Length: 218
Image 1: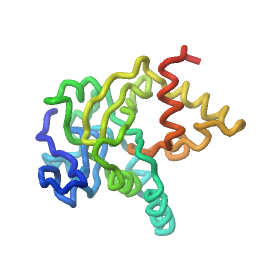
Image 2: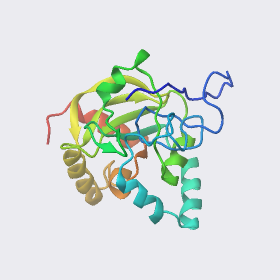
Image 3: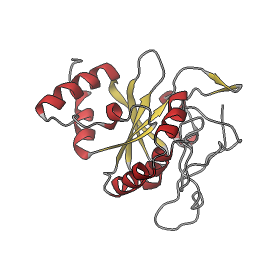
């Protein structure tokens, strides 16, 4: 399912990005937000890919005003690295196929596209905090083998495939070990806020996960 691209507005005020009430997106991705990135509806008015049923539940669970305030404060201190989820396998939602894999991103014109479909308020806040050129992992979710498939830059633009696919099971094993030893993945949002389709990463988390592609699977 192809859609017109909307580009993320940069900080330079060049005027060729999305307006201030939009947020970045990937066609059929998972973002419904309000920033130079995403809209509350897909470009065609339909829900898009990465968003799954769990995020709708998360939006209800996360409606506490105190949590909202805490999230806003947290966003201010975020690093410039992210993890963004999308579904690589076909799944019809209200008659629309929400499939969008990293291969689909790579196949887009200039390997760049918009990301939309995010409804959860916390994911929206994270989207607002993003800046052009920041790095993000492309995470395949809601599929037979979820995990990190590649790298992209916020706009959204394909950078490269991972040297090897990093499965969720491997990340989870490190997370559990690091909770006991104080390692880099001890507080990784992927495990504390599993339903969020847009997640921040610390520099330490990003560097550690990236280093895994050079190692044999654990």
